[in-house]
Image 1: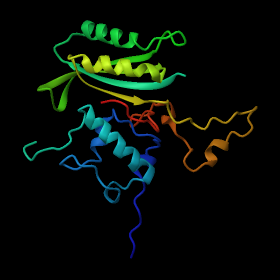
Image 2 (image 1 turned 30 degrees about the horizontal axis):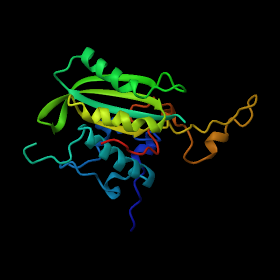
Image 3 (image 1 turned 90 degrees about the vertical axis):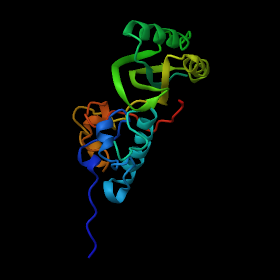
Image 4 (image 1 turned 180 degrees about the vertical axis):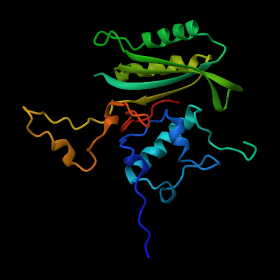
Length: 73
Length: 146
């Protein structure tokens, strides 16, 4: 049986645009290594996944988020 | 033509706030022209923060976020000066054309009050003014910075 698609967590919170300066929110959608979660895991709609990807890349550039986290942290 | 931009500066953490202000004044002076005598809309000093990774061997940076409205033709010289300044560890300039318009429907004496909620993605978006804790507006922005 096909599993029901998760609803977008950003849409649910009533937010239209993701901010690249809000690293705490963005961090929720990265892996332990710092990679961007794919849609199938983040459960986001296409619009917000696109915004998330841009926002995380911007946050990385200004050192709010790491490009990669090593095992030691 | 004036466009809205947002700049994030990361200064060397050894600078104090007055020195940072001096730098900002020098940078932003380049954005002034006759049409737009006051390009700076807002400046927010975040202060010292630990960087997620070292930049130029610094672990801590002094963050400043500025919202500017300026003519795009003036940005070349502005970016050149910011890049030359060694006390700026990094900067990022993005187009910030404001928040997504909250589908402002001209309401004439109570008519069409619900028109904005007809669109599936319109709905109740309190963040349209950037007030939400998850997000503030930065839609459709094009990256210009480093």
